[in-house]
Image 1 (cartoon, rainbow, N blue to C red):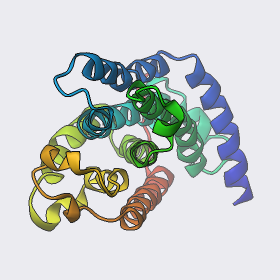
Image 2 (cartoon, one colour):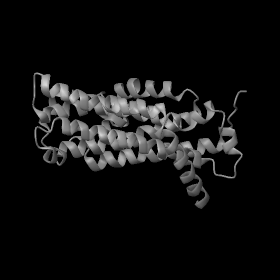
Image 3 (cartoon, rainbow, N blue to C red):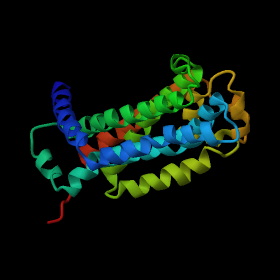
Image 4 (cartoon, rainbow, N blue to C red):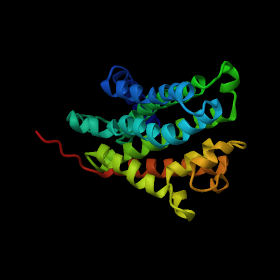
Length: 259
C-alpha cells in the first residue's frame, strides 16, 4: 500500500505539471468559461432576466448536461491513452511500481484540473447572475448545489473515462457516445431506468428546496429525483466500482506499443 501511494503521488506531481502547460487544459478552460459567458447573455439579453431562473436554467441545461461531461472527458480520457500514444507506458511498467499507481496518480492530476475549472465555472455562473449581491449569491442553495454537482460530476465522469482508457485505445470516442447518447437517453427515461445514469444523480445533488422554476425544465416532477444523500451515495458507489475495475484491468492487461 505504501508503494502504491508513493508511486501515485509521484505520478500525480509529474502529470499535474504536464497538464499545467498543456493544450488539453486550455481546451478545458475554454469549455468551462462557456456557462458564465452564457449566463451574462441570458441575464442581459434574455426575455426572462430573473437571476435565479438564469442560474437554474444554465446549470440544468448547459453546465451539468454538457460542460461537466465534456471537461471530464477531455481531462480523464488522457490518463492512460496518452501514455499509449507517447509509447511510454511500457517504460513505466518496467519500473518497480504498482501498475494501479499509473491510473490513480494520473487520474488525480486530471481531476484536480477538471475540478478546479468546473468549480470556477460554477462560481462564474452564480456571480454572473449575482444582481449586485455576490456574497448572497454564493451563499444561496443554488450556488451550493451547482458547485457540489459540478465537482462530483467531474470526479465521477473523469474516473469513468479514465477507466475506459484502460481497455479501449480510442476512449474519447467511446466517452462521447456514452455521455451524449447513452446518458442523454437513460437520464430522461420514465421510471426507475433513469436512476442508472450519472446525470440523474447530479440533478439530485443540484436541486434544492424551493427551486420551482426547474419544474418547467424537466419532463417529470422534481420530487422524483433522489435526495442529496442518496445521490452522493450512488455517485460514490459508481466511482468506487469504476476505480476497482480500472485497477484490476490495468494490472492484468498487456499493452502492445506499435513501432
